[in-house]
Image: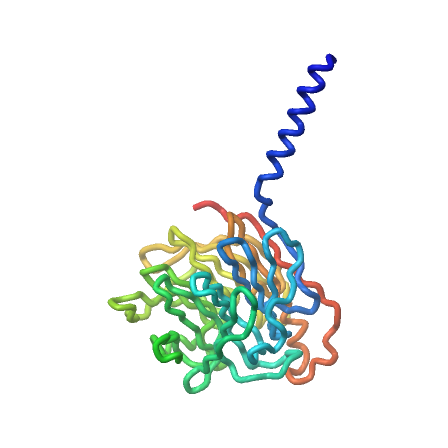
Length: 333
């Protein structure tokens, strides 16, 4: 090999390495959460920063792009956060929103359920919004016009945050929102922008509710989307373009089979029905997830470990339980 050829080859390698140094990092596929975190919900910002709420520690973790392990972002109990339920990123307004529950099993004081807001850049506590007449703030979704909608697990209603008054008010109420006899009502929520809101019930059922938007953001008549089988406690739901929904079936109340949770992809039809495809099965309470950059990221909450103990006495809960965020490819439409 001539000296000239060797020099040219070396320069080619150097140029290739220089070019690769400017490539953006590949999106992370799986990452670790703090031990004993018991995640309940996950959200992602446009730049790929993930936020994960802890149902046990009353905290929120964050994973920035390029990192491989999430660290605490909102400290345990900050702003009265207790059972961290749904979390949501409002990039435009610089807010991180979270529902705080009041069921116990926590390492922080139990507080009345409320909607909480934090600074998206620093995690500092900002505001707390009580649910009118009590209730249970379970999950939340943001419409393109900036309106924030909240599901209530104790009352048959969807709430909206009235920014002018700074209070939550009922957007729509319907007795159908509380199926079953255990007193639980709504769970997950997703928005088809400009068209409708979809909500799931806490109880296992074969349908979701669909509430169309009418003039000036008012609620239309409550309808249903019927599935070919019973959903195993549809927890988090996420709307995808093209009339699809990600459904995270936590199977949270099936204590005799805690490893039967699923992540499913639904295709919505115009006749009020939907088809269903299972993406992942055999999970320990996959209560939430999110689609990002062609993948579906999901958590396993492992509720069964907590629920076998009294809500007010969890001293015997095992320590050192690992948790992760995992992902699978999102099928193309």
